[in-house]
Image 1 (cartoon, rainbow, N blue to C red):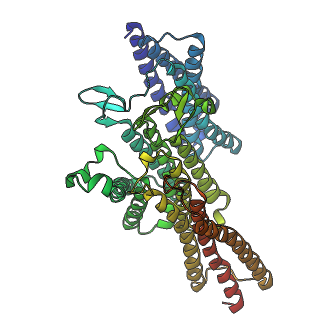
Image 2 (image 1 turned 180 degrees about the vertical axis):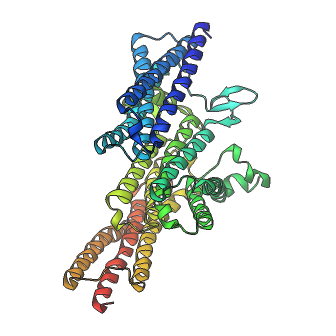
Image 3 (image 1 turned 30 degrees about the vertical axis):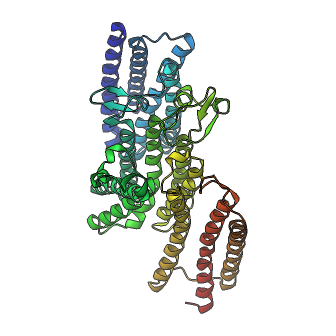
Amino acid sequence: MNAVGIVLSIIGALALLFSGVLLVKKVRPLAKALALEAYDLKKERKDILIRIGLITLSSILLFIGLGVMNNYNLDVGEYFKIVFGSMIFSSNLAIGYASFRLHYYQKQLDKKIDRILYICWIISMPIAVFSLFLLIEGYSAHWGYPLYNGISFTQGLVNPSTGKPNIAWYALCIVSGAVLVYFMCDHFAYKKWGKHGLLESTFFVAFPSGIIGARIFYVIGNWNLEFANQPFWKVFAIWEGGLTILGGAVVGIIAGALWFKHVNKNLSVGEAANFIVPTILVAQAIGRWGNFFNCEVHGIEQSVEYWMWLPNFIRSNASYSSTQGFASEGNIFVPLFLIEGIVNLIGFIILEVGGNRLFHRHVRPLDLCFAYISWYGATRTFMEPLRDTSFNMGSNGGWSWYWSIIFIAAGILGIVINHLFRSIYYQKKGLLAPIEDKKRYINHSIIALSVILIVALALFIPGLIMFINNTIPEGTSVITLVPRNIGLILFVCGLGVLSLIALPIYRIIRAGNKI
């Protein structure tokens, strides 16, 4: 290692830590201040910007030092990526922190300033992510692939081609995702109920419960393949790998809901679930980066020319499979971990922005919990058949796939039952608004009923025909997206949509009986 680079890295790291503490010490009291009149806001803004500038300069020094320390022979373009990437990454993280803290915790700000702060923190996060990729790209040509996936107590840093780690980045990704989600949910709880810490004990129950559920689901699904002829203690050998998110999500949600209700008897577990459960998708997206370091959860080999838009470090790491070795020259394994991670983030945005903000008047407590189940079920339904078959679960490779399809229908049915029972309950309690225009009310319900029937039949009938009249080609996986399996998906989705007719039927009965 280069001594000059070590010195630069240490100075940069210490300066970054010091300037970060200065920023927190400046923003925190300002966000908590009960009377802003005591502050010179122009001076405070200038001081905050100076601290953000110090963070930026420290970050540049740190990352240049890392390159020099490792004796990377960086060219001009790589230096530019490192300097520009570290500058934008660190400054946007700092801006995101300051604007988030002031926007949500300082209620006396001018509306125009408050709006600017909100826009700043929303924009800063995706910019930080993309600039981080640019920063990494500056180093990527000098790394060996596959990348390290953890630390071995005997070998040091190891990658999937040299040994198994005792501390895996996969585990760190899962834990990091869970911690981030906790703070997100704590913030949502603060916005709703005005208090921090309401979810602390729930987190310490739900997270380990989810890990246990993920392991149980994996053991059951892969019993014949991995555990039937092994010592029983292997069931508990979680450090050897083997978790299934589908089972972990269900057990974690149930355990967390029961515990939350136990310790917060005066709060609605359904309302809590609506802002907690969608954030699981964020944790899952981060967890998929653990699969990236493990070189697993990928698809078939494909020419790298289709994936040149990806950063080099992703393409290079995807050229290796933990089960098949290196791909052929000019090929990589399709990075399904990345695709699923992006789909998970899209799902979170849809459920959070759509469910909790744009259409919140039509959303009932628990609705977004069931919507999450359907969304993730649909995601896995179409992702499982694209995986390398060595990563499929069950004796025939269909364990997770069949459950994913069940999740789609179960989530839709859960929303229907939730709305129906709550409508009946609210009606008995006299909480439903009276019907002012009975004819219009019934007409709208009939239109809704007709649309639901048309959509359900459009899925149900073709799906049934495709399922009955086709077979799975010999020699292919039972979950390959052939006409028979596509028909099964359409059939189940049609049944789920068909269950929605219960809602307009109830509305028609309610109007007809004048109840």
